[in-house]
Amino acid sequence: MANISISPAIGAARPARSATRNRSSAAHDRWAVLLLFLPPALLLFTLFVIMPMGEAAWYSLYKWNGYGMPTEFIALRNFQVLLRNTAFTQALVNNGLIILISIAIQVPLAIWLSTMLAHRIPGVVAFRLIFFLPYVLADVAAGLIWRFVYDGDYGLFAAISNFFGLATPYVLADKDLAIYAVLAVVVWKYFGFHMMLFIAGLQSVDKNVLEAAEIDGATGWQKFRYVTLPLLGSTLRLSIFFAVIGSLQLFDMIMPLTGGGPSNSTQTMVTFLYTYGVMRMQVGLGSAVGVVLFIICMTLAFGYKRIFMRND
Image (cartoon, rainbow, N blue to C red; front, side, top):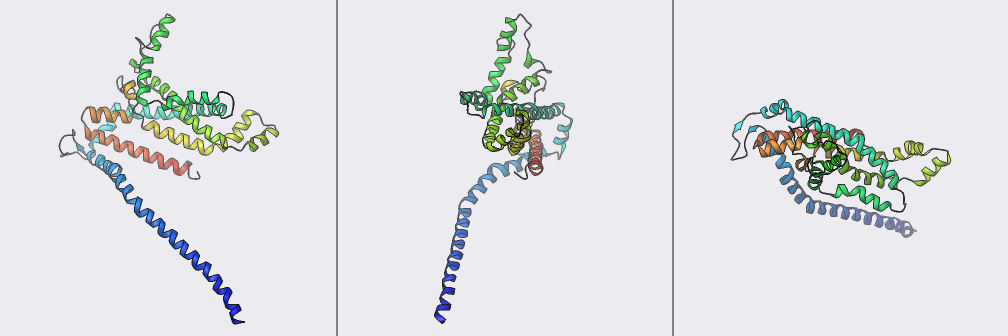
């Protein structure tokens, strides 16, 4: 009788000990992976991210031309110069305009095209490729192409104006029109990326939900407004996040297109940093711009994620 009552307890203890050993082994493996891969990643992140950021913050406190070691400590005077600089103020305004146009025109255009190209219809792949191709094109190449298009002497605008017998507009030479020319190129260049995001989001929408809404008598607009758009909420928030952060970092396309001119009318914060911090050898001032840009990007990124993307 004793043997019969003890043997089940022994049998139950063995799987428990085995499970404990398996959990211990899995935890040991995780620690081994962390110790193997985490130190090199932390080292690279420190060398190429943390240290440059710290150096930029340090240089921003000096008046320095980039040669030798900075010695003329001026505290926060570089930041005071920035706040009084009309070119930097214009750069802030231009970044705000680019963000506004990206959210108000670029994202809605991408949603509209994605609703048409998400279905499996003949030729849809070709249309997706055509609309996505500008995003694949390098920013510098896009800037050079549109510089030729806008050229008032030999470009496409000049050819069209001459064909209709109209006066040729010099768009990039007009400080009132140049920024709008840049905004048009920004929309053309990046809406394809957002379109592909929304196409991926639409393909994950349950077709049964749309069919149920159609059976209930919903029109096409009602299905989009009350069914499709809410289901695309996480994709829409992600698209806006990319649009905002990308707008703050815009540089490669503007330099070959306008170089920040005319009269600093198309400067962004990054082109201002390059023009004044690198080309004019005011490294301390350029570092101050980098610090301001970093603070703005981090504030917007973490604030946006905390407020709008905390459930995604």
